[in-house]
Length: 227
Image 1 (tube, rainbow, N blue to C red):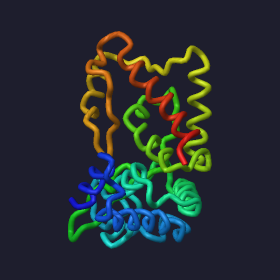
Image 2: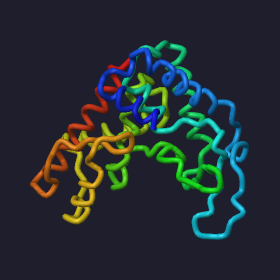
Image 3: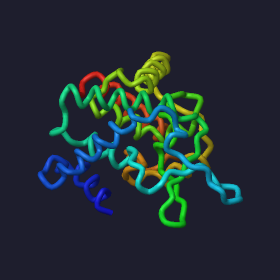
């Protein structure tokens, strides 16, 4: 709960206050620890239970970066030094290199197993052919907000794909059914997991295109201008 409060404080513009400094340091350490891992099996254990969702797991004490660590750094400034930014870029690239694309991972807390959130697989690189990307674009945005520019492979490749898509007519758009558009409304409340939506009703003509095109231009601006 405390890390969620710190994230909210950061997103509201008060993440550099003294009481959040400890969380910034913890977030940096979480990313730094990734560089110590040579392969995923170094930190995971085999789940001996039988069942559909018995994935490999990590112990509660294993310290890895979460979306909350990402948010805590993306919206704050005090931690930003050239060395820290290089560390984050290296950690994210290394993390993506050791995580399988179809990775499933849980964390064991006492005798229960829980999902570890969005960061248990490599960064989803932007692709106009992947509808799922609409729901996961926030993670790309906040990685770019770290000031890593194109040092992170996932950001660099997403930027290239995005610029190619926009070069056609300047609009970012998917062909979605009315049902799919309504499903997206479930994810419109801003949080550490979901991106904010500017349009109220995706059934209106061009509403989704406006939202996504705004995001695309903002994303490219962040890559090129955030230090």
